[in-house]
Length: 544
Image 1 (spheres, rainbow, N blue to C red):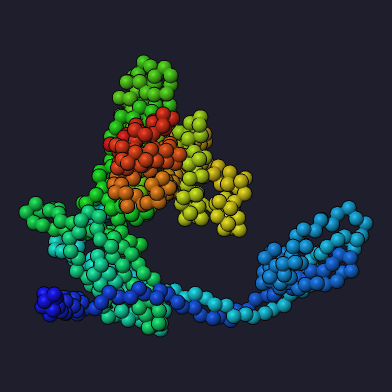
Image 2 (image 1 turned 90 degrees about the vertical axis):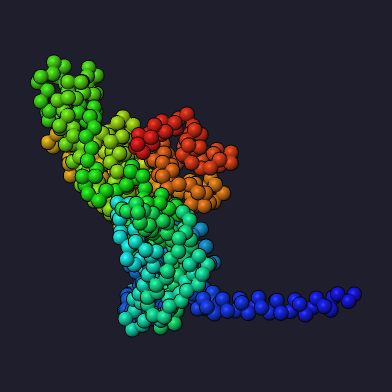
């Protein structure tokens, strides 16, 4: 009973001390955790002039006007317009009425009809959303190494956040955020944040900016990784810096990394997923038999010294003599698309070496290849492959569709096209990469072949998106990065998706995930169904 009063005074000073230390820590950090930003909230009311079209709804029998419909465009009012101006009851009756046919006089028809009564100029106030502030990321005093898709820094780097206010009459007042849970705040439009070493998964960065407009940018997110290296000097420590974010302005990170939320390996991707600095880095000299046979058939190679005409009896491949005679021509041809591959890789982010390896595996660089199953071109796209491209690469769909269909049709999106329109679009895409040309030199339309390099790159980007969705669907809605799937393995899964289809990939991933296995290529590939197992050799050929 007497010990309790003696304990009370001992606890009060300790708890007070803890509170004081916590208060001092917050003060030394500069500020407490910042509140979430309100986000953009900027609209301007503009007065616009337009033509108002007045439509009347009237009864067939008495020609009695029952409703007026006003629209700001030419053409018949939509069902929504009728509903808004005439109400649900009239709209329902109008939709349900039988068509007025097979009658001597229209005034004997039941129901209603609409007609254009006139048009006149009008004005109205329209709320226009104004552009919001943005914040961009970069690092200071670092060397951008594009071939490794990373930045190398001699010292621990600093992250630079630069905010931009698009409205000339307003300015950025402050940049705020949190890095790995630690808050920062800077007056003005620039904020420099010191970075610390991280693990290979990196740390979360959240950031935003405030404006004199009275609002803020949206909250942006990035994943920042800083890892130690001896790059370029084994006796000196330097640092690799990788940032995954839509706002990153430094060296472009390896393609699809942001989609998958997966960092590439520290120091850059493996050779087969690399993009060299110079076109010479793509040069190869492999004795491709199928390519040699095509060059021989087109008369590019002198095979007069070959008793068999340079071809095997089945006429599919080159004989040993023909392959030797075609050595130089084969070497030159397999490198003729290298500059274009490198250029497309820089524009799309698809690894240049993988794209070249894929062409080697699919067609041995002969763009006039069309197989009985419909596989066409350098990368052997099919009707199903075209469907994947349009579904999973909307930006490519938007640019390609208008070359084939009307802008009005394309605007609805690929999923909303009529079935015959989808078929026309898929046929057009497959045909666009078919370089077979009876009247062209060598039987090849080289202009179409060169165009196809970009098509296949965009098709691979579509497959990387679909592969990510397959992982999400069959792993309890988790992104590849949340499952610790490596960057390299995600590209291998993407190649399975490209070669065998999403169904094959989904079944194998689901089986591996259900078994509690790590989703690695070594664990997932054995679960590919017998009909899909050819994809294993396909992936191994391209990744080696």
